[in-house]
Amino acid sequence: MPIFTFDPGNLKPQLKRDEGNRPMMYTDSTGHRTIGVGHNLDARPLSQQAIDQILDDDLHHIMAEIAQDPQLAPIISTLSANRQMVLVNMAFNLGVGGLKNFRVMLNKLAVSDYSRAAEAMLNSLWARQVGARAQRLADTMRQG
Image (cartoon, rainbow, N blue to C red; front, side, top):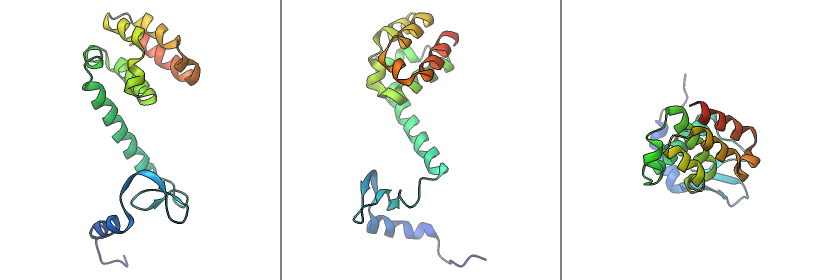
């Protein structure tokens, strides 16, 4: 039998007021890494549910940014789902601005030259930095 008789949702406004509500990590007054509404990362790592929610939020943001970009949106709208996932994966890692720096790849995608787009991906500093990830994404770009 639960010992609490109140709804925790009723406490949230008080905690937000008292603890603050910060979207960025900060060091609290006792030196602990903290995020959100007083969530002490040193004492309690993020739950898998919180990690999944952050990932969902990040994906939504990246996809919305790509969809609104006048350079990327027309290209990505013509691609298969797998090739779209490649570009979102890259944007997740590089940022949308970083993805836009792959001019040769984007030009090849615009003319459906997926093999050369994959070559352009692999012929980059990014590919050398991320290794197997780049190879997997290039393979997907080629195969669709």
